[in-house]
Length: 175
Image 1 (tube, rainbow, N blue to C red):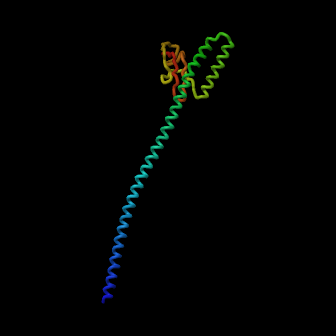
Image 2 (cartoon, helix red, strand yellow; image 1 turned 135 degrees about the vertical axis):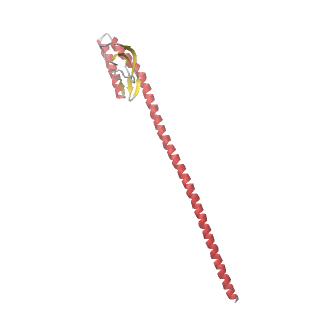
Image 3 (cartoon, rainbow, N blue to C red; image 1 turned 45 degrees about the horizontal axis):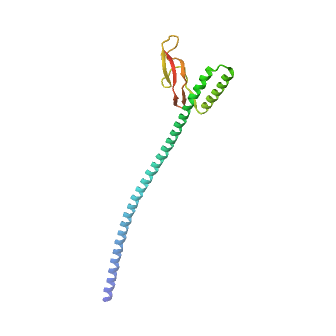
């Protein structure tokens, strides 16, 4: 009988151990699931931080490129603006040159400078019809022999680089 008790005790112990192991496994599964959820949320958080940092870096890179290009364009325009008075002086000298050799030399220099500026993308502003976006009307006359908004005289030539006005043309406008 004792043997039966021992066997029953052993069986009960084994069943209890099984139940405890099952409970432990369930607890382990619950712990694993909670750890998994915690790791997934950390992963999402880190991924979000990474994506935000990546977007911020990309915006910084684009902004830096834009600023650099803007600084280059501004410096380019400033340098060209300083050359324009030299062209004006050569044109004035050409009108006052008395002998043929000096007149020819001045016109050759002037053409060379103008060709160089054209290669650099600088264009002279047309002065046929008045356009307030590119011309500065210094004087205005009423004369019926000229058309409406016709430019009669150019006091100072205007220049532009791409879409940017370097200097407005100073003109005399009719009507």
